[in-house]
Figure 1 (cartoon, rainbow, N blue to C red):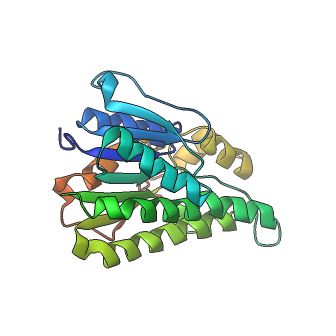
Figure 2: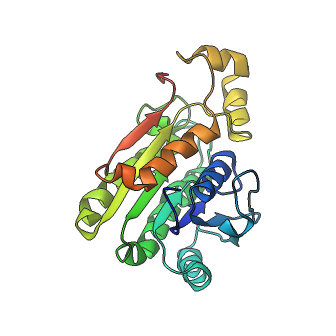
Figure 3: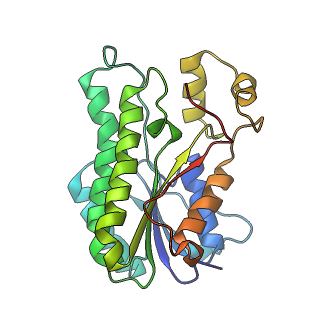
Length: 248
């Protein structure tokens, strides 16, 4: 119960990784604000108390959505101790193929929403005894994949943003780290990757040295570790979880 009595905000909570992170935080004793844009989700299962997860609906692509969310979370759950930005979108295309609307939509969710929610949460996190931010980036933000320039560059921006937060707010007791997943079994985004590449799931798994795709629960375990006091001297890190796969 390493997150006992802490309040953690998780965005993208309806997705595969976001749902797994929400459940893992709840099992570790946290009060979780499970945030999503399209549906309110409260994961249930073994070890998850019914009262541990509170669903919230919010559109974080607008600044008002972020400030309103923080106000609602503090009104219902009290102080904020941790923030996990997991919401993300992917648009395919190289620089000559992708249009400006898809570029803007990618950055609105993958970068701008992360920035806005961190900015809205920081005054509260600075008051917490053990505050932590975990931003879900991507291995493609470190090693770009072909034909996905908007997604690659947006996730690289998340890595840099997170390192800047760690540098600027470490003195205030706020740690910030990013996680860079590789190929994780999370439909529909995984299916989009398979369709874009014209390959089968088994072929993708065979390209990974460990011989399989990652599981959302494995990303969730890393997330709860980085939120916990076990990671008390880890800040500014970009942690790959990709089974030793190299992009390219």
